[in-house]
Image (tube, rainbow, N blue to C red):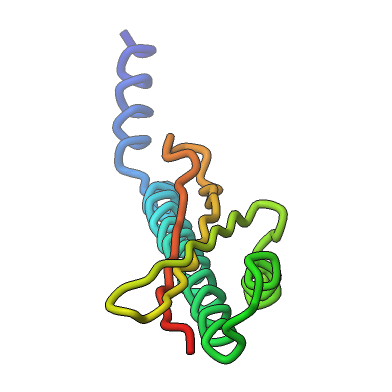
Length: 137
């Protein structure tokens, strides 16, 4: 009987103690906060990649307006050169000339695969694309 009483007192004392509670609460909250922070960083990186891709295509379009006889290869090199921070071997660039209302146009399209770093979300790779259609003089 005395053992049972001692055990009950020990359990009651253990329940009353709050040592380490803050550490457990921080561990639970920190996991969620860090996951959200990583998600925000990944979205920001995807937006930066898309904006860089759009800038590179627009820069090649401006070059095409100034140099109407520029070949598809030259425009592809311009896109690759302006896409700073992107892996040029993963960059896919296409150009398509067209005529509308007697005006010559060139459409430059670039695509780039973007892979998320978060392994716990099964997002995988998304394809970002940018396009620019400019008149040729």
